[in-house]
Length: 245
Image (cartoon, rainbow, N blue to C red; front, side):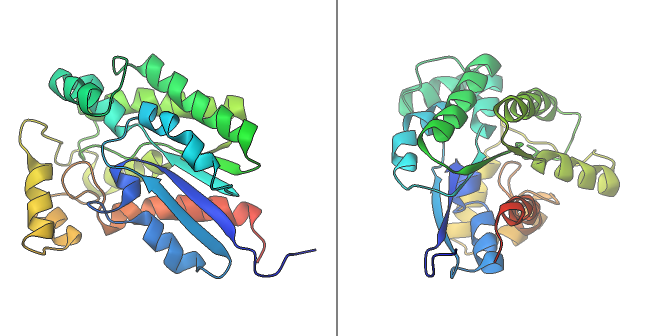
């Protein structure tokens, strides 16, 4: 028997792509699609977070008593693993006690999933990490492939859903530009410039994306409307597997 008026809680964990302030918000898209009569959307994405930070703040997440949890965490782990300067800064500012390695990432994600399983009755989904830059042969994207393979393996072992966000984006880029789009240049502060354009010049994220020469991204990391839509599509399918209106 259904309890009238009780909303299902959907909790989102991750970093800036999840937070949706400097990335087109896939959470807002889901609100529009699914509505707020039957669902409550809890966004705990925090810009700059790595998987360790998500794990350390998980007690706060558990207290929300979610029915569904969507995890999209790890892009910053990957970027730190490729940039020693960024890794040092992240460890200092985010108080991360370990080096940015795949093994540490794997441990953190496993513990996040296991703790959610232990402390909540929620249905859990792990999203594969979106592309970084749109050259699929780049170091960023070949490294992402290793991290996403680990996420898929964890999802299988822990018997939670795996949402193929990266795979959908790669398929699109392969169809449209043979995977040879503009790469992510971490030596040029495109992200900071894009941030200024959005908040000071009031440029839309899609206009910034076009100006920077991307199809799915704004600055090589964050999502434009199309990139965010691909994430929302996968999450919506996950929710509808379990939810009967």
